[in-house]
Image (cartoon, rainbow, N blue to C red; front, side):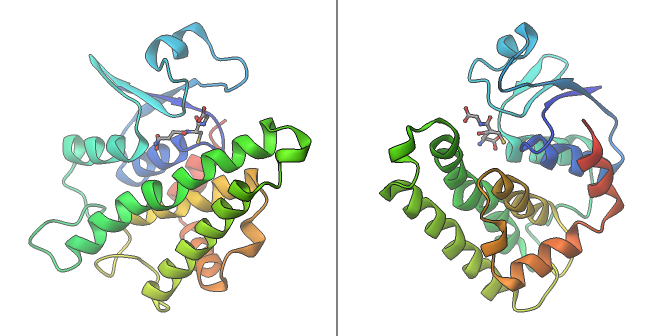
Length: 201
Ligand SMILES: N[C@@H](CCC(=O)N[C@@H](CS)C(=O)NCC(=O)O)C(=O)O
């Protein structure tokens, strides 16, 4: 069974949500930032969350974990095939959720919680916040009122993108999200699979 090192509010939510959507069984193990267990430190020396074990396989990238699970446990409509319209959008937004959005959040979180008081509002923090909001504006414009980013259906790309709303709470910028993105994510959060995943401690 998949073992997912999880912390509530962390990117492990993506992996749990995907498993819940697909009905793939998993177990979780604690991945505390502040008091990492020896097991977690061994599995992921970087101590970033999530990590995942599947037998001999160990992974530490959440979007790669989603691709792995869909390939191993699919087929699933959460994935868009190369032959389908929307494949390029799917690939792009699957990656964009991390590389174009959430990755910008890490230094912002670190600055908020770890920087000296006189550095918390520095140029870089301002740049990162603006960068995230600008990119969300872009996604909102591309959505143009549609409920999903690719292939006119709910896919793993939506799971990838939606994580930014959870991560943003650590830095208090969720209220500044464009209205179109708030509506998009609120709709995704209605999914029972999301609610089950979000409730996992
Ligand atoms: N690209 C990685 C990023 C993992 C990551 O940075 N996770 C955050 C929590 S959501 C973390 O562990 N931050 C602590 C740190 O960067 O040291 C992924 O998508 O899994």
